[in-house]
Image 1 (cartoon, rainbow over the protein chains, first blue to last red):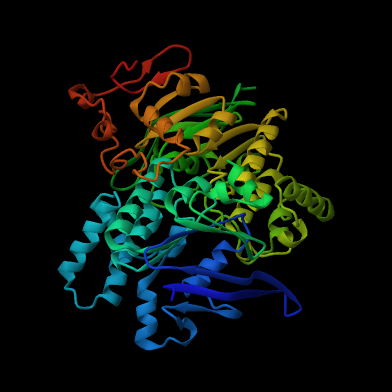
Image 2: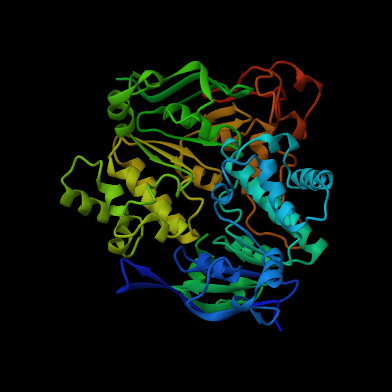
Amino acid sequence: MSLLEAVRVGRVFPIDGPQKRFEALKDVSIHLEAGESVGVLGESGSGKSTLAAIFGGLDRPTSGQVLYKGRDIATLKGGDWKCFRQSVQYIFQDPKAAMNPYFTLRQVLMEPLKVNRKELSKAQMVELVEDMTARVGLPTSILSRHPDEVSGGQAQRIITARVLLLEPEVIIADECVSALDLSIQAQIINLLRRIRSATGASFLFISHDADLVRYFCDRSYVMLHGRIVEELGQDLSASAKSEYTRMLLGGL
Amino acid sequence: MDSRILDIQGLCARDSVEELLVDVSLHVDAGGRTAIVGESGCGKTMTLRALLHTLPPDVEVSAGRIRFMGEDALALKGEALRKDLYMRIGHVGQNTSENLHPLLKVSRQLTDFSPLGRKEALEKATALLESLSIKDPGRVLSSYPGELSGGMRQRVNMAVALMKDAPLLIADEPTSALDAHVRRQVEELYQGLCEREGLSLLLISHDLSFVRRIADRVYVMYAGRVVEEGSLDEVFGEAAHPYTKALASLSGRRSLDRTRDLDEIGGSVPDKGRGDPSCAFSSRCPYAARDCHNALSYRHLGGSHYVRCCHELA
């Protein structure tokens, strides 16, 4: 039994009324085992982000199922659903859109602890938040600012910190470093690697940067027009068969 | 006519608490291709926002001047601001979702402000989208921004900027959300545009390989200041600032070794004390010495190459 599994998932979006439909995902099956890091490669618009949202329970498939430890997440209720949402966390592509603009960064980071770790005292939460802020390479003085008042790279580190605070089993990272400078990309990736070896978390790592996927992941899926067209081993290029995949890998 | 299309001199900006930009001087020659590089939080985008009158509400320009096509860009207001600045600058912003109206179809956002007739404007928009490797421009034009992927939105943003045929194109991280093969095409597109007569480019990017292929003049910013400037060859060929060297060594990585961590510049851009006259990089600098805490000025290294560092590095 996989930790998290998508079984023949489809997602259709209506465009301009019921007649026109856009099939973002078609019959997609992927699985993620405990402790595994799996990459998703594909050109822009191929359905990577839609798949990530459905895999993380942020969107519902129009056909097929997502199974968490063998149970269909559509049937999870109450405490089970909350447990799933806590164990499967999502690092967004656009960090500022993922934060409440009226919150200070301190509030942004306190919120998941207040919801999910009610047993902690305020002082313990503050300590966790400040410790995590330092671990993602930011000065704690930044916590009094609002999302608007920090750079894109700093915002992405705050979002990463917010995810890591909940010590999730699965982290879905959707282009989580593509907007960052190389030095900060390296800091975030190194941080994710340290978290991975310390906690054994599994990753679904979505990226258009084939070098990073090769560096970070154990195996990968390749998407085109809403389908999985190829599965690759760790050394991507050695196992790539289709011309499309070779273009994705060789485009660098 | 000025040989510089954009000339920023001694620009300082601050909010109620601290300085954000300190004495930033940079220029774009008419027909030139200038790039600003540096980590996020260094003030690259803030410099652009000063030019475009889009600074956050509590931030103000406290000193310096900006001349754009002979006009004092900071003093422009109302209709003159629209006509003399906004219609003459094509701007591809960093945050693709923020720069598009969520409730208007892409077709309207591409054509509404165009002086061309609607039909002509649509034809031009379609051609632009095609030149940006969008295979089905019809679908993209009839979509709302929220229905498009990040990479698609970035190309729509580029098309919006190019619709104006503006003499200056400003591109803030224009390739960061693109797939590798589309990035190639976009790079070629920028190269093509620059070679077209009269178009000047101000590029902000952390992708140094992109900068190397496009720019002819480079400014390296750190903690709100320009720390090194010069021609492309001067800055990348004979990098004089330890920060420039560190950035260049990072971008050289392309075969990554899974058994070890990625190279990084430890620490982060300091948050406070940008107005301090000493070197802000010294806390992360491998060459840091006591001299670094003294007040610094720019050293001339020949040509148009300047550096703000007290070390003579080989």
